[in-house]
Length: 152
Image 1 (cartoon, rainbow, N blue to C red):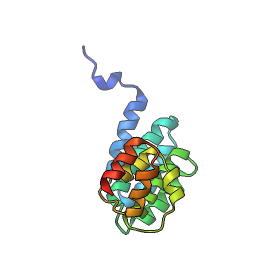
Image 2: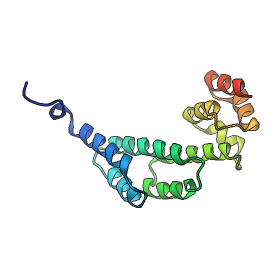
Image 3: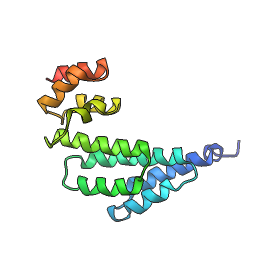
Image 4: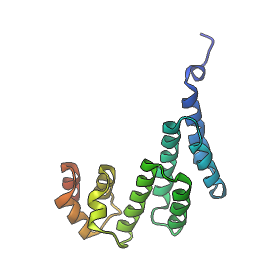
C-alpha cells in the first residue's frame, strides 16, 4: 500500500474537513465571507452541514453574551432562505430568550423542533419555571416531558 487514507476519501469529505478547520479558526471580521463561500459549494448538503456545525458551536459560545444578537443577524443574512439553517438559528435565538428570561411565546416553544425541546428541557441554563412547566406538560416526546419534569 502506497496511497494514504486521504487519497481514498471522496473530495467532498476533504472539502468538509477543510471547511470545518477554516470555520473553527475564522475571525469575526472574516466569518460572514467564509460562511458565504462555504454555502456556495456545489455540494449543498455538505456545505450546510459544515455551516450548521459552525453555527452550533458559535451559538453555544455566544448564547448569553452581548454579541449574540448582532452575530445572529449577520448569520441570518448570510444563510438566507436555507430552511434548516434558518430554523436552527431561530431556535438558538429562542433558547437565548428562555435562558435570559426575555419574551417568548408558548407557540414558539411548542412548535419548535424536537432538538430544541430536548435542549431546552435539559439545558441547565434554562431556569424559566413557565418554560419548564410547559415542556413538562406539553413537550412533544416523553423524553422531553420527563427531562423538564425532573427540573420543575
